[in-house]
Length: 100
Image 1: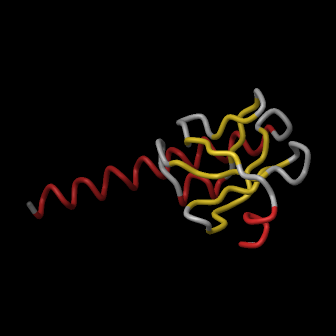
Image 2: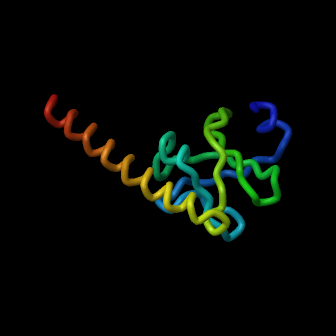
Image 3: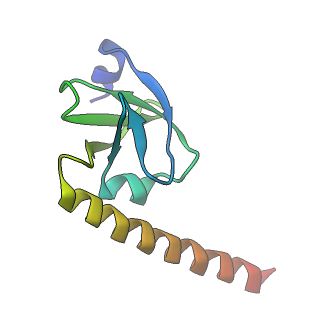
């Protein structure tokens, strides 16, 4: 997979709270919210003419993301994933606050 990043032109994007914007559409997936945070800078590769994107960070494949309009289920799954991720962040912050 690392070869795909070198052979195909990459596009720099930032992860937003909605997902990743590309060509006027918003892309996301469950794995996006598990591995990345809002504000992370990523490289995307579109080898499928917009059906899905490969997301890389520091040259490593992180996940595939899909356009939300094309899959309503993905949007619902991502909302649940974002909520779970926020709860995880809150619990981690509380642990660190109790330690220090």
